[in-house]
Image (cartoon, rainbow, N blue to C red; front, side, top):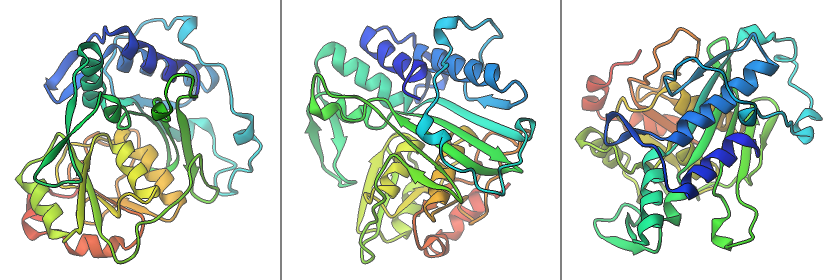
Length: 320
């Protein structure tokens, strides 16, 4: 996914004209990048696989997609891998694709504002009560991802996470972006799996959608450290790259397009993603989009974290 959708996300940011629309409030935004990237992904997939069911985050009017938004490339190194036998006979009409064209939109818009006005942002430092200034908006761009998840029989079976601005710290001329992908039974690629040391509990949670229920649940995990970052895709990256032990979000904020791709990658490396009750989410075409009972994801020791969820949280967040 190095072509059109990712190029759109970068181009819109650097244009400074984000075309922001508030969907349900100031923390639920849509930009021109969201709209164009979703058009690009969905139209490109539909053209090649017309029988797919594709569900995107953004509600867009039906209109013809320009050829400049169509991605025709393919990754030969992926096509050379053997599909796990249990999936090799699937038909495209049996698959549901969940698309989040721009996960971490709030951080994306904040980064644009900082770049335009040459201001600094205040970033909570590892969940401490104090904050430290973080030069420029570049830290915010780590939170931005593009997510494409594939489901079969209600289960997430493959996922792609692209970080459009990965490698920014190497300055002008650096090759930007990376694609991480995975499939249970095949493996995960595009990153080096790392784990938090077993005697440490580091919890990652929301940066901008917190409330008492969320903080009570995080505290109940008895973490040694808390990191607050944006984007569901980025939080799963924290898990698989050894910067967090658990992703804890005790709130009905995430939706299926936020978790399908990350869940598939997490499963591919032995991790787990459930609601706060420990129940799996389903990704059938007809399910409700909201993950109403929160999100709990871990690389290891999932049962421990489920056991620590307070009764008040379980009472407030009913499992689907």
